[in-house]
Image (tube, rainbow, N blue to C red; front, side):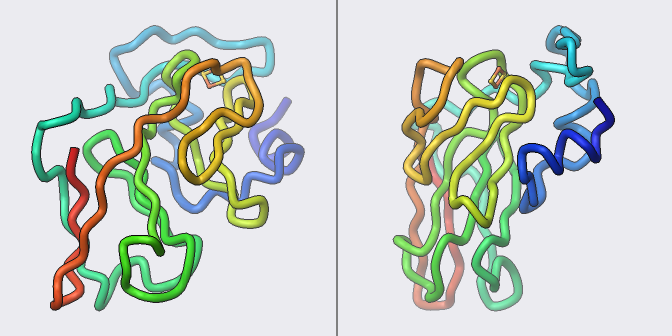
Amino acid sequence: MERAEFLAKFGLGFAAVCTGCALASCGSKSSNPTPNGVVVGGAPSPPKTGSGNLFTVDLNSQLTQVGDSTVQSGVILVRIADGNTASAFTAVQVACTHQGTAIGYNTSQHIFICPAHGSEFSQSGSVLVGPAALPLHVYTVTIDSNNKLTVAA
Ligand code: FES
């Protein structure tokens, strides 16, 4: 199955997930092609709780539209609603809990989808569809009065 065909099948209007990285071998983890040619593994390990601030985003110029996302420090941060409040964002580990492939956010379905084997996760990281059995780790989002968003573990 070609990449474009796969993306079309799963409706992955990915909101930007390490393009080229999620579907190709870019990490030191195992290259374990599935029958559909998707390479699993490769996403960075999720940061551990208590490791402090992971990264910041300036909301005056970044993630201004619902569905916008960024992947940094093993976390995918997605704007899920209008407004510059913490509840307008979700931040979860980018590595699928099944075999570590980088997940993406589907803006039309409002869920995270893993391109390797089709696991689906809610905006809050809970498993909606396996084979993943464990939820995604959720990170803390705070926003200061200057619209600087911080993701922390
Ligand atoms: S790596 Fe298998 S569903 Fe994500």
